[in-house]
Length: 247
Ligand code: PGA
Image 1: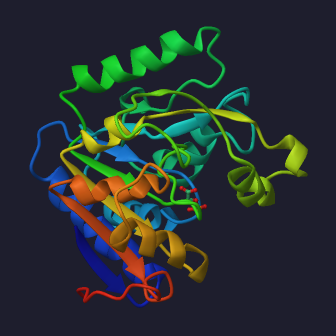
Image 2 (image 1 turned 180 degrees about the vertical axis):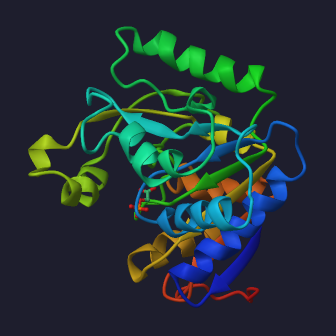
């Protein structure tokens, strides 16, 4: 596990964009796993800038998002499909058909989950997966207690996650109770993972993920097993780490 500490979210976005750009340069059809939430926004801003000003080409890139709420239409203001379109896809030269977000409105959710896994496999697997981390250590919507070998499936959101995400909805009652998420097994099958974290509110989760035991109670701790996992964390999010880190 490589831990890089950066002064602020802009630096976090640039360091992450460097890794994404480098990975994209290695493949004819790069397959990049993406995340939603407020944390990756500086990365997406930087990728848009590099696409527009630096010639970073997404025309052959394929993306797979980690998760989607169940029951929100794609045009709902809080659907992750809409989030991705508005914060990244609509601003870069990616082919819309090459972007994948689980369909939270599927009639047969189980078939949707199996199909998502199949599509990832058909593209040759994920070259680089971008991750955020929940205050409870979740990755994607793999809440504490999730099987470390799990694949894409439906999960019930914990009260903590629903409260954390209530800020984006009119009230907590409007926050969906279920989501489709890549499993922890899906995530660690990616050939490289980068996890981003910013803010003091993530300091405990980052400490548990990096220095705690490998446990399903902190799903991000599974990255301790991964050969190519890089954490890019701001100083405040790294505030509770005790072992030496890079900068
Ligand atoms: P955040 O969410 O980036 O909005 O903090 C991260 C997550 O829950 O995975």
